[in-house]
Length: 190
Length: 190
DNA sequence: CCAGTTTACTTCAAAAATTGAAGTAAGTTA
DNA sequence: TAACTTACTTCAATTTTTGAAGTAAACTGG
Image 1 (tube, each protein chain N blue to C red):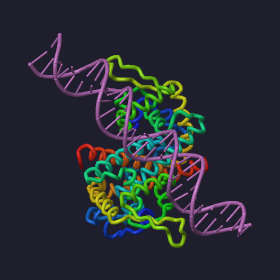
Image 2: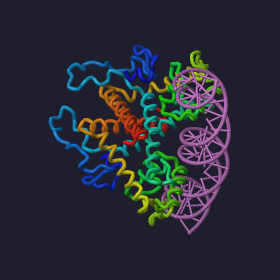
Image 3: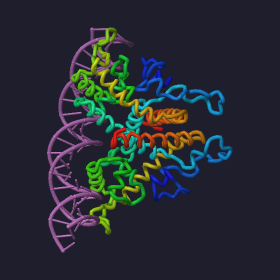
Image 4: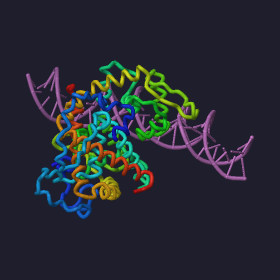
């Protein structure tokens, strides 16, 4: 039925999005029924990727409107994500790169804008003067705090009970797995 | 520990990323232990959003390299996503908009490029001449097929057993939920 | 039937985000 | 100490996204 939703013309019996039927372990033994049979439908690689793209778009525009509500004009969604990635720790540009899988010049660009806007401070590290230490200024912290306040409502909607929490965590971990698999593939070939 | 990974300085007892402690249902009764206690850590809104952004970036660059391998120069990751969204059905631009939460002019732009490259056909609908019917050409189908072939390897790595399948599906459904919540919020305010 | 509105897109120009090549300055190593 | 590596930054594209304005077809109320 999600299948239906995404790929109306696909023959389920033969091949979905790059799976051959043989690619799958038998889907059996789910009539013991501690858990309802969740996976009546197989979710593929590309379906997830498309879902992720959509959700990402949604979140970006959410951030944008949130920012507008707050009257912040000089921080777009991408920069806001950087602020959230910095969080309340002090870190180097390199660490930030890892946090978001950015490309160096990209982060440099955002950091420049954020520094110009007064949202972050950059101080050269004492021990290694090449390395810039980044942290939120009070202004930056205030913006993050406001975003987090706004976010509280979503957290309450999304995590209403124990099951929700479990699912959110499974989603998180599964995405992390995707991150690793796709990332390693990019570097070393699959 | 994921907590640790993302927000090294946060006080777990007080507030994480917009949650107050009071926002959560008690996390109890997990020593019955049918399932291991999955959610020792609470995943928030923003953590998911950041994860999604990262994973999306990974997938884009994967698509890009895949495209390079295939020797396709005139289709970027974004356009490839559109091709995948079209899949093997014929649909209207409006339906495509829904499938990806695009903005109209955006899709128009991609469709133009894809049409110029010979990857799609657009035919005015008979019943409603305003509406364009879109479908992949043979060339477009071939490209998608190649991508799906390449994708098979990932599917095999990602969905090795029943548990993997279950988790992928939970992730998919959870993301769908995020999509709805964030989307509705964008339109009607939360 | 026909003015006015809505729908389904397209076009265009601008802004934002991403990429990649080249640079700089500080550390490290042989 | 010369050569190399690391940790970034800058700049100039390129790609992607946005928003305003336009067009043509379909619908709607009088």
